[in-house]
Length: 266
Image 1 (cartoon, rainbow, N blue to C red):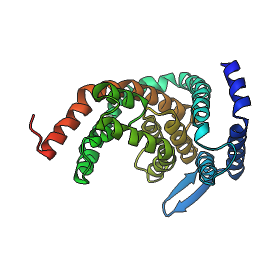
Image 2 (image 1 turned 45 degrees about the vertical axis):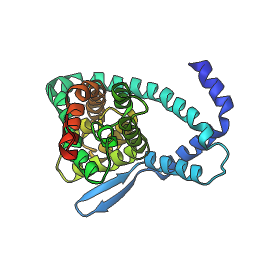
Image 3 (image 1 turned 90 degrees about the horizontal axis):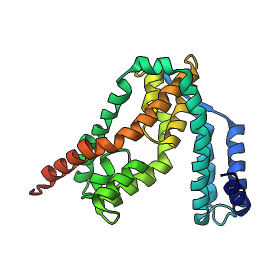
Image 4 (image 1 turned 30 degrees about the horizontal axis):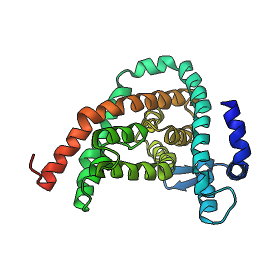
């Protein structure tokens, strides 16, 4: 892995320089708190870094940012996630007692996946979307979900097009959404910080990291290691369960709703 990192650094040095500069600028700005009545929204440096890189990409031509560097960005993310997971694993181990006390709640929270089918799918069909809606709404559309749809329907199917659309949208906006919405629920007193931490563990490492940072910032009185443990374990469980949930529950339910609303005969 070290050799691979050295080779990538030499080849994509301009890209890495842009990433470092955007990250430094975001860190220098620091968290920005916006008070809206009874609650406060905290904008974190992760959000600024994403916006800065987006601006550089749109402000073409900028050396080091463009379609030719997508592979480097993907590989860089994969490598960084390894270190993040190691750190999160240590934090989770330190809070193992809290994990055991939660019990089946970590498993049962994945029932929320049914909500996307019951609410998002009918809306998509009413808007005129066809079979793509099944792939778009049966789950969160992360890597395991994309693989499942490709295996069930094929990579040329309408369902696969749908899941890929949501995958791309989630990659761009998912982290932003996760960094803003959970802290709002904490500020409003709707959910406890531990519940919000579990909620951000949806099966996506990038979304979890963004959401967890917001939750920790919104709940300074809570133990950060405990919140990290809840989010990490929830993320692992969600990643593992989503495939089986999709095979046996959400995909069949999506097909049933599609047939009923479209009047398709079996």
